Image (tube, rainbow, N blue to C red; front, side, top):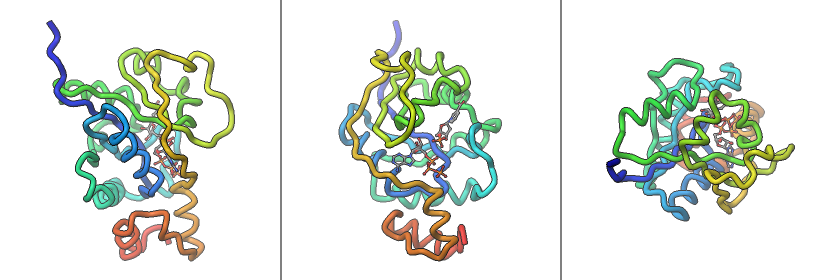
Length: 198
Ligand SMILES: Nc1ncnc2c1ncn2[C@@H]1O[C@H](COP(=O)(O)OP(=O)(O)OP(=O)(O)O)[C@@H](O)[C@H]1O
Ligand SMILES: O=C(O)c1ccc[n+]([C@@H]2O[C@H](COP(=O)([O-])O)[C@@H](O)[C@H]2O)c1
């Protein structure tokens, strides 16, 4: 007989270069308005679909996620991918997490933009078969592929839409713009003091 899992954990993967209020709003919404007990923000060293240039060191991206989550006990920063082979394929991370935390029930949190490209992820069928995927709305082009519409393991969540990106923030800093409202206060202070992205 299989043992009942003790905790429901939603995994929110990203490069978080840097984490911004769009990410934080989603993570908090997911943990407050779903059956999840916790959301882990998994800092990805190297997204297989992104270039590594302009990527701040893993430890600094993790530090900013930790700072952002200080007052959110149900949200955790995770460095689980730091010691896994790169680029980081999500399916491999999931296998590793299952072995390390057999008592926890994992699901995946993803934006609708990611769902549109999900069929390009490594072994996406395996992920889809084994995990619940919570999808929140994003403004983006193209349609969700037919095979994902109304899929039993995919749940749409009506989270608020905040269209900002880490790229926009990095470019703004480089151009000397004030981008403070887009970042948690303490994260802004950290990256300003460290002279990141200038
Ligand atoms: N404004 C936002 N609202 C909700 N989700 C977001 C937002 N920006 C990014 N995400 C999602 O958060 C996860 C991590 O995103 P990522 O770290 O790549 O951030 P990003 O802002 O898109 O970064 P970049 O501009 O560097 O590509 C992804 O699933 C992405 O779709
Ligand atoms: O496993 C894959 O093939 C795969 C391909 C693209 C992206 N991902 C994961 O999706 C996360 C969010 O992607 P992105 O493009 O929105 O930054 C990223 O941090 C990776 O962990 C995973």
